[in-house]
Length: 258
Ligand code: CO8
Image 1: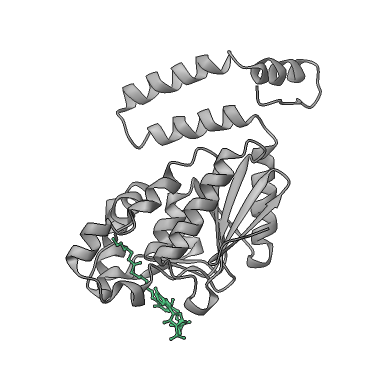
Image 2 (image 1 turned 135 degrees about the vertical axis):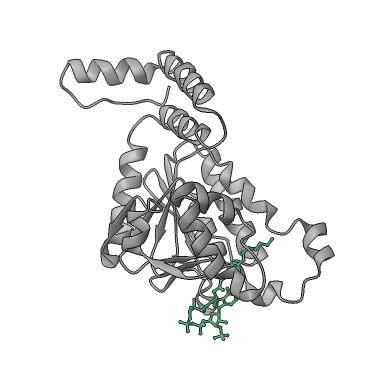
């Protein structure tokens, strides 16, 4: 089914799974791979049969960063004129819930890609880091901002200034990842989690995601007002009627995404 060169795209029921597939480069994120991921994610986002998306890599690497060999010869003007990696913003704009299922290395742009997703499920083998400083550059796909929001200034500053990696346990302890899973169970767990999300009302999931994301963009008072408006709007849906009726009648709700 997949027509992409750098990823595999599969559908499991109402879940779309994007697997980064450049094993020879530990899934390093070159321009072509970025376009494949963004095109696949936006096409899944437009498909109303899809209720959740998983982005994953291999056992060895989620992604070992932006492609250093592709970047090495670029000049400032190449980077600036092409607005290098600005395309990843289209992934952040996807409305469908997106889970990163991370095993092995998630370094540099790989860590940033995982953080672009709505939450991270980590295999016990996962290693996160922003080692750009060792290459004479800094994070460029949001790492300095998203890592700082996720784990706080002290740890983000230490990670970015030293370039050290952190294992799954530390990542969970400091709030970078939602949960740790044994490596052998990672994809099955991610699929079960995504299937549970996709079994609920899609429009309500979109509102929930929008409400949480507002916490990163606005003041507390504005965020709470925004949440309340979205909450009120859920009462305009048939799924609110169905969800509450099913509770009262002690049955499983049959959501229709209306
Ligand atoms: N880019 C290109 N190729 C890579 C990358 C990468 N990021 N990472 C690994 N590879 C390649 C290796 O070159 C090697 O290829 P070959 O066999 O042809 O030599 C192959 O993948 C396997 O890698 P290793 O032999 O190094 O495997 P190891 O198991 O020994 O080591 C590591 C694994 C520790 C992950 C190691 O490969 C490594 O340190 N990789 C680089 C990690 C890194 O520095 N990542 C940050 C990159 S910079 C970045 O992401 C900036 C993002 C912001 C850009 C914004 C622009 C606007």
